[in-house]
Image 1 (cartoon, rainbow, N blue to C red):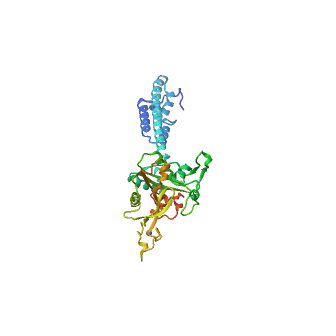
Image 2 (image 1 turned 120 degrees about the horizontal axis):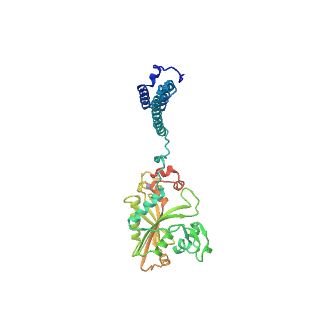
Image 3 (image 1 turned 90 degrees about the vertical axis):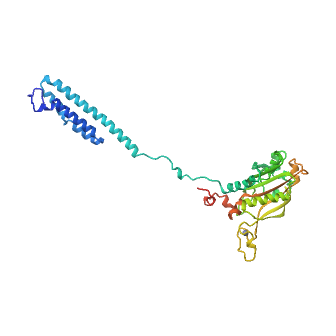
Length: 373
Ligand SMILES: [Zn+2]
């Protein structure tokens, strides 16, 4: 459109005056600074730096100037266009980084797991009961003793005064891990009761001795509402000078009151265990009806089957033969022991009628005891 030999036209070249160029540059810079988005800036770029922009048109006019005027005009327009191009690129950078930040913010993905939806663990009701029972004994000054679940037959039976052919060894339907050939003297069994822990305590701890031993026991019973091949027992053992049945009775009463309620009477009836002599079954007054179900006109009681008494434990004075097996002088020391099933205590205390509920891990059962799932 313009040619160097074209006649000098004062109207057209007005666009090349210092004022006009400065005005075009300032207008462009103001528009660039005002652009609030990349789209705005794109429009600004077309308007102020495009082929039809004032500065581009002015640039095109340079060729029409007389040669002596070109250099100066060219410098002026070139500087203005550089200013505009620089401002555009700076603004572009700022707006792009703003956009990137906004996109990161808006499209942010929360990759953290919701902490408050994770199930909160808790102890199993059998564990809770075991700890509560243990606490009662610990409060009476007993120490907690534990022993292996896979036990030498000698600890499980022989030391507890079960002769080799004693029917109890079959009666208890023992799980044998290895026969007597396993060692010179003893087979290996899954312990059928927690009593071997008492033997270990008597062999290793100084006298007088007051220990409580909670733990898992195994018998090859079929699983039904009242039997389980795996169950828990807790036993207490005291060995001291001058202990009598009266001390045993006192310990039992204190335990029953702490576990089941104040003022509950207990009853001992003769029984037989190889490791105690004399031996007795412990019953306590029904903690629900307190015997009312046995009196004329009393409402029937499901917990004690209207018997008024609930059998809870076995007990007795430690058989002197057991003391001797553990190297304790029976003329100087005497001992008492009593033991009970932890699942049975849980069932009695909370009215659970099926032992399988304590084994199956159904959260609807466990939740009732305060477990949160
Ligand atoms: Zn009752």
